[in-house]
Image (cartoon, rainbow, N blue to C red; front, side):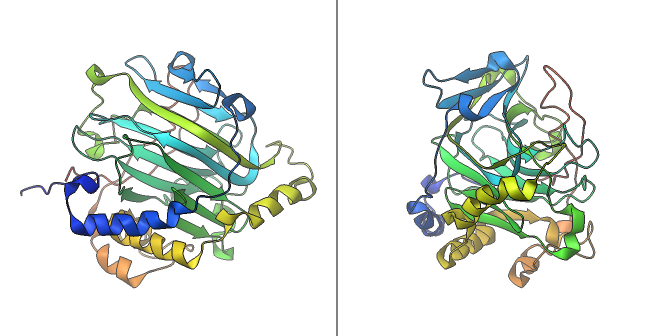
Length: 348
């Protein structure tokens, strides 16, 4: 069967694409009011120290992947709810097998009951677009993957774009350039599967050849290395807290949580909700909520959109497998593995 070509930006010449693109980015013109910090104010190297390069002023950092190691950094503190954000530029051209992850987790502190919120950017062969997924785990619920997969309306390797995760006691929102792309609202039926323990913020680049591109068909080609992801305008907002003791969480976090609740990114406006709907209609190509082979009864947080349901009626035929935890520390230390369910999607 002939494969359909998928261009990665407005240069494709598609009038429909340009129209959708302009509708979505129009929401992001009024940027959030954010306070950025330097690397040393909030972060520390995680692994691959020689492949982590800070700018002279400490306001930006580059992570490299070469044939010897990937690299990563971690927030110096753990947070009980927060807003985590950075302007990120991804590697260009041939990036098959690469995973660039920007996520929160507490797997090191809670081995069997960890929480996690993910952006995972999945590389591709030359000339094909990056794709990415978001995911959510609570209390070690890794057997119930909550991943969604998407395309982008721009080329993330040409310039910086802001990626953000809002995590509060009531909801989680993933943003791109101040446009919400996914919202998970907590409800009683979720129980402990809603992330609720303190988490750190991570950024990593690593070799995910076994699953990241077409289910592992295309591997990392190190003749194009080093692969570089860049980060600037770093944001950490929330309540720093000890992960194990969690002493006086109500008292110590009340002020920080009040700031989160009053922030402009905490409420999705009508215009933003329309932009989120457009994004999901035209750029989301997998959602676990409509995968009837995995979940004949959708998980409790799923809000079924009947237009989306019609589009994803055949999703259940896709395959799954993969993990970023098993590889991201490989150069210096191995973390406890957990499974991240992924959709095996062929190159278009």
